[in-house]
Image 1 (cartoon, rainbow, N blue to C red):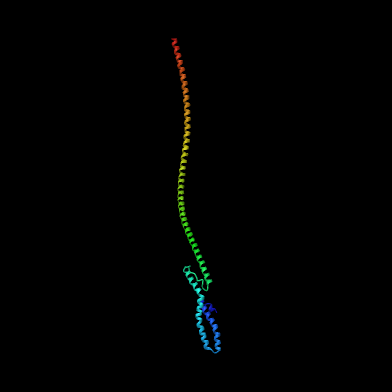
Image 2: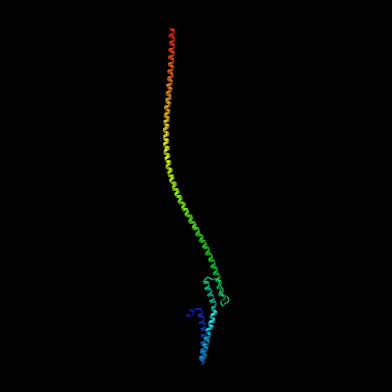
Length: 233
């Protein structure tokens, strides 16, 4: 019976109907053959075979109509239309209702997935915008860092020049200090010479005063001698 399991559902229904008819016709045909009524047996088998085909088609349509409906709805859903529904009033109403419930849940899942995808896309777009802004900020920071580095380099050069200028000023101040010390030393020496000159002048003035006094005494002596001389005459 493996060959029958490999057949599609419709063909299995037809084959099953013919097998049932054969199981019924064979004993009847054997009985009629035993009774010597061969013609009646052949007619009966022919009539049974003729009736089996439309009966099998009717049974097949009755059992598979719901499957055909579900198949059509499946093809419609495959095209993206989730509005189609299987007929729940057929011979397989429970299966159709379950199938329709599955469609509703699938539609809800797809709707939620679409919303999640949209949110993810919006979030990704926002992240991309933020990354772009971050790149711009990083570029500005890099540019500012470069400018700061150039400014620091210029400041270092200026500081180096200032250091040289300060050293030059220190050298000049040191030379000025040395010159000032030399001038102070010479000023002290000059003051010493002036003091010595003053002392010499004072000494000379004292000598001159003494000379004047001595000269005055000499003059007084001469005057006295003159008076004495005039008295003697």
